[in-house]
Image 1 (tube, rainbow, N blue to C red):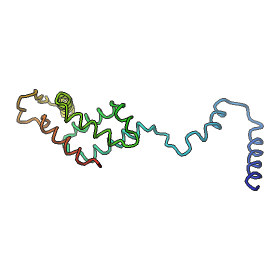
Image 2 (image 1 turned 45 degrees about the vertical axis):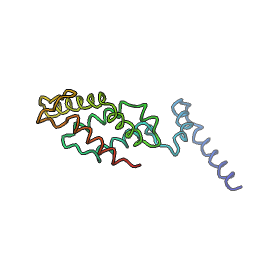
Image 3 (image 1 turned 90 degrees about the vertical axis):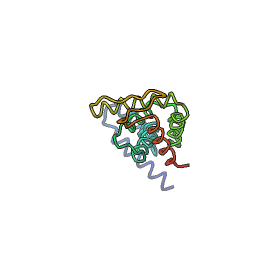
Image 4 (image 1 turned 45 degrees about the horizontal axis):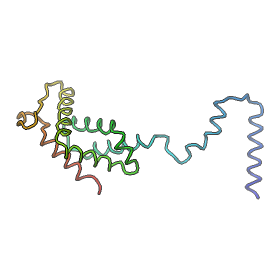
Amino acid sequence: MQDKEQEAKNKAIQREILAGRKFSLAEAIGREGGDFLKGESPVPKLVQATTEINIFIATNLQDSSGALQAVLQTWISTDEATVSNNLENPLQALKQMLNKFLNNPELLYELVRQVDFQWGKMYDERPYFQSPGQPPHPNDEYTHESVAEKLKTLLTKLPQ
């Protein structure tokens, strides 16, 4: 009974406060939408998932120059479909993407090409681009084999 009395008092106070105010659409939306996000984060789930993946990459990928990390995080941000399908377990999306790179040589070569390009931009140097089936340049930090190894190592660090 006390709850109903308290609720009635609260409504009476609210009516009194609003009595002298002019109606505004913004205020009405604000009053009605006050409970809309109750218990939910205002950050969209896709952004939360992408951020979780990017943090995992940043803390677990051995990449001294940072070019592979930057490109991998860009791929994660642009592959919204894979991330969206794994909102409850974002690291599963990362696992799927890493497996795609490791199981598809053409996709891996494209990733390495983008990493080489990013490395060149970051260090203002001409990158070394390895052609498929050709040996890498001796000074190339990001070869097809080295990137594949880094991705495999990152894959092993994912929780099962």
